[in-house]
Image (cartoon, rainbow, N blue to C red; front, side, top):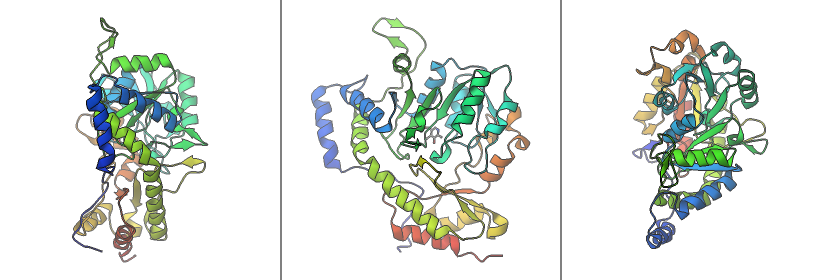
Length: 374
Ligand SMILES: *Cc1c(COP(=O)(O)O)cnc(C)c1O
């Protein structure tokens, strides 16, 4: 094992450059760079087919896709969401002048706890925005049941759940809308990019207009949309990535399995196993460190790995509810979010990416297992 090579939590997999050149030649020939170009159209079709969804509207990034999804459904007032996510989830609410209401997570998969949603519903609640955190599906049936009972919309932040299926059905088909991110750090990437998945051609049309300033045709602006278009170069990159993505996911699965074998039996270290009936995408490999049993805190382990050139990330610490713009909200109170707080202090995401070597996984696990047990 080379000791001076940095191992980061993730690393993009760039396709062979010579395979990208013909796409660029096509774009140069078309002289069409953005605004729903031919490669953009092709990518929407191929992604819908690959993912097993009906309608998909591409966006320039996942955050603008989330913001536009909320706008498309006229969501206002309060929205119930999780504090255990990337900050963009809640920022999307802020940009729509919506008040986030944080509800605690469950400890098995760290997703929004359906049992705690109802108590947070008020007359101002208009939607629930859960996250399939680390790509593990939320309890979608229970969430939908509550949404139906109170007439609420459901918008899933599915940024971690590319290709994830439950009983052979894409999780993206649940709820009113689902949102993907194709950022360079995600399982599938268009460098920067994102998408909203919807159920009707009318909604797709609405989303297509919203990402193009709200234009309908040449002369009519129906609402104040934004510029969130994915360009032809990104679409080309996405088409090429799509040819490789099954291989990416297989490689990630092999790494996750290797971690599970090597980390099992270490006292005080917990990881998440595959869920029954779920096809996973292995976007992250989080472990939870129980400091008392393990003999070292999460932060101590994080630092020790760093001194050995292993750069894990403490996703998601701090909680979104602890960040400045949100920490004075009543629902940000720690007593309201006890499980999220506990997990945020225990979690560490280990490196997982296509080019990660078996020997590197072994090295990381040997560092983790070296500690003396109490
Ligand atoms: C990456 C991510 C986003 C934001 O996506 P961008 O494409 O980077 O704007 C939103 N939510 C979650 C949970 C994410 O991980």
